[in-house]
Length: 114
Image 1 (cartoon, one colour):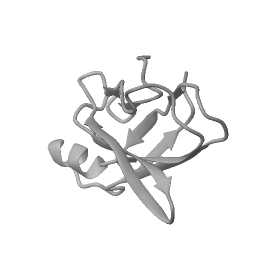
Image 2 (cartoon, helix red, strand yellow; image 1 turned 60 degrees about the vertical axis):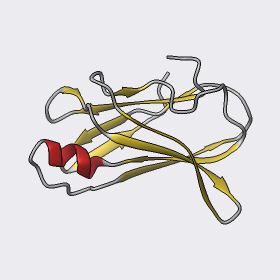
Image 3 (cartoon, helix red, strand yellow; image 1 turned 90 degrees about the horizontal axis):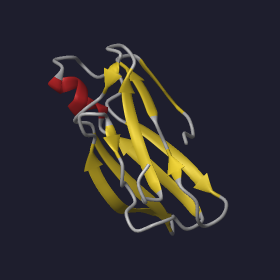
Image 4 (cartoon, one colour; image 1 turned 90 degrees about the vertical axis):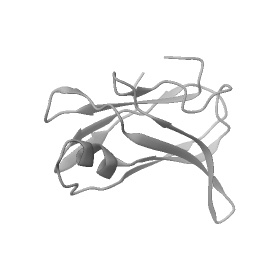
């Protein structure tokens, strides 16, 4: 993992390989809404290694939005889940967080990685 406080990795479990080309947006809760912190696109290994460049995140709520419609369109498939949003809460400032997404055309799963 990089020096980034937040990273992600998308694996296409139906194809058994990394999901390259998935647009990803990181947002932080601010007041009654959300503020965009960063965006990226998964590389050939399905990773966005430095989704939150500059070090560890502050305590609070964050969400990672995966534009799965763009990914599935590139494969010529309709998207049952056109977007996957993962909302997490960091109780304390600091640390490194890896937030993987396991993706298939009709399902997904996520977990806190290392």
